[in-house]
Image (cartoon, rainbow, N blue to C red; front, side, top):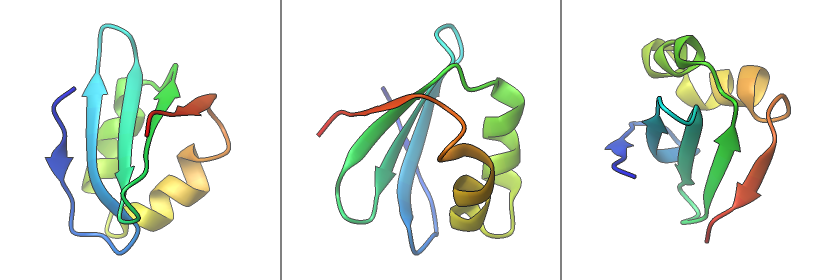
Length: 70
């Protein structure tokens, strides 16, 4: 999945597959997770947020099923 780089202390990059509703997040630690059943509007809001790390922590991290990719 192609990811776009972010300017965030916590998030290095994100990618989204709209057909599968999968958000892929690379953290600055290098770990990559996939979050499932994430609506496209949440991804848009994440990208537009003044603090993408805070938005992710408050709105996405604990609300969607996820798995570690690597």
